[in-house]
Every structure is written in C-alpha cells, then in structure tokens.
Length: 429
Image 1 (cartoon, rainbow, N blue to C red):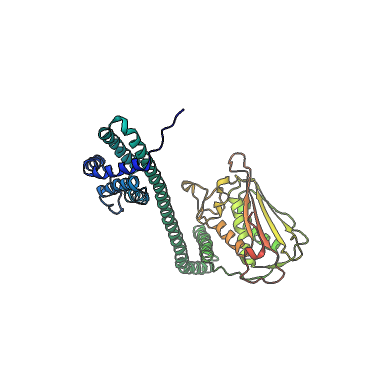
Image 2 (image 1 turned 90 degrees about the horizontal axis):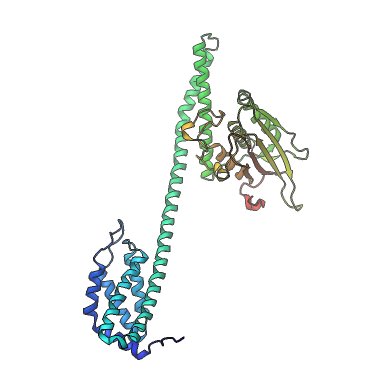
C-alpha cells in the first residue's frame, strides 16, 4: 500500500500565488453562485456585511495560508462567516456547502491550468487548507450556537423571573385591596345577624348563612394570599412561643370536623410521642400548616376514606445537634403522580382540571387558588424545617393514598430569627 506524499512548501507556495492571480476569474463566479438563493433575514437581527466581502476575505486567506503557511486570517474569516450569517438562517450545512462550492470550482480550474499529471499535488495542498477551513467553520458554528442558546436561556430566565415578580406583586396588591371591602362586608353581615337573630323567615336566614360562609371562605383565601406574598418577599415573621403540637393538630381537626363528617371520612390522631416536649414555634402559623395539609387530604380522599395523623421525634447524631419532630399525615386518597410531587408546593399549581374546578374547599377533587400547600411549605421552611410528600402515584380507581411529612426543629429556647436551614443542619431529602 502506497500513500501520496504531502506537497512540499514550494508547491503550496506556488499554488497560493496562483490563487491570488485567479481572484478576478474565480471569486465573482463563486459569489454569483452563492447569491442565487440567499436565506431570509431573521427578524430582529442586524444586517450582516455583504456576502461578497466575506467570501473575498476567505479566498484571500486561503491564498495566504498556502503561500506563507499562516492560518490566522483563514481562522478569522471562518469565524466572520459564521458570526455574520448564522443569524440570517444559514445552517452549518449551508455554510459548509458554500465552501464545498468553491472547492469544486477550484478543482476544475486547477485541473485545467496545471494538467492532469501536475494537478494532483496541487489538489493535495488545496485539500489540506479546505479541511482546516471546514473544521474552523464547524467549531465557530458550534460556539456561536452555544452562545445563542445561552443568550436565549438568559432571556427566558429573565422573563420567568419577571413573570414571577408580577405574580407576587399581583398577589400582594389584590390581597390588600380585597381585605378592606371584605372587612366592611363582614361587619355589615354581623350587624344583620344581630338584628335578625330572632327572624323566623327561612329564606332570610339561609341568605345570611350563605353570606357568612362566603365571606369566611374569601377571608381564608385573602389570608393565604397575604402569607404567600410575605413568603415571596422574605418578610414572613414568626412569633415564637411555647407550643404544644398535639393541641394545634386537634384544633385544626376540630375546625374541619363538619367537612370530615359531610364526606363520611374517618380521621384519627395517633398519640404523639411522650418524649415530645413543648417547644418554641409560631403556633398560629403551624395551625395553618395543619389546616392546609389536612384540608388537602380531605379534598383528595373519596367519601368513606381515612386520614391518620401521627408524629415521631428524631434525635440528633451528636449531643450538640438539634432534635426534630416529624409530623405524618397519611390518607387513603387518589395519590399524587411522581411528576407532581415537588410541584404541588408551588403557588398556583393545581392537579385538578380547570373545567372541574369547584369553589368548595373540601369537596372531593375540588379546585382552589393553589396557595394552601405553598403557604404550608413557606411556614415550615421559615421554621427551619422540611416538607415533602410520598405517594405511589395517582390512581383514582385504586386510591393508593398520599403521605405528607414535615419536620420541625425542637427549640427549647426562642431561636435567632436569622437561623436558617444550613445552620440547623437539615439536608435535602
């Protein structure tokens, strides 16, 4: 097996000088062929330099590379071709096709000028330069594509952050704007209840009950909106005091007792650990955590199902570590799909189809504003804890159930408000 030797320096130099003499004969035809079907300019991009200027630079850089062995100009022209014309819609294949067209024309011109016997060594030198040019164009195209994708990702990130800020601003403004008229409605409703306390008209009594129920429901939603706004802006303040966790759970269950009864659900609170002391936390905020988690289980558990609340103490590995209490709320509901198990704690995220939305907070699979679990997570996080859900998946026929967990640090003294998850040593689950 024999190999063709690489052309010597003199041969390449001679070919480079010959290329320069053929500029006026070869380049115009090349430019004309390339401009037959120019790509459409992408809206929003700057107009690139005329294609003929870029092609002339490439041709001149090839001649220099052959004549003196310097490839800087060739690499710069390859980069210029990509940067100027990729935004115009040229694919990598299109750019390499432009180079291939020049290569084909030069092969024909060299064969005609040097004859078949002498053309082979000239073509070998030309091939080496074209391979180098093709490689540089490909690398430049990949780099430009990566840069464009990075710019697009940055823009997308900026738009998402702006959208999230707009949501937070809307929540804050809407909550405070709704709070004032709601207070007036509740006040007048209370006056009507006092004045019509002995009214026997069933229709008026039913209207007053509906008015009270609606304002109470709206009040809960506004309370959640304000809490989410405070969480988003990192201004949620905790008022630490000695807290008996079992009592808070019982109060939350009592407040949902009517819904639990109407849905024919069985709810049991297992005895909390005897070694769980009262500890410093914000009881009013923790009530909201229990209320939202239990309410969520009620909503997604079919009539006749069951809900169980239990707790356990998690001791630290070292004497200096912090103990935690883990609260577990398990239900026999329809479950949570794996892809939803992280997202259900995001505000406005709901797994109920909008067409099946119901304003009833504890109706089976009823909809809602999608704030309850976000509020629960924000409160638990503010305490330096963690919250998550375990479920085999969503199955409305077999009802595999869901188990919500949340961890709270057991503080024997009011903690420093600045202490966060890292200082408490909680690891991501």
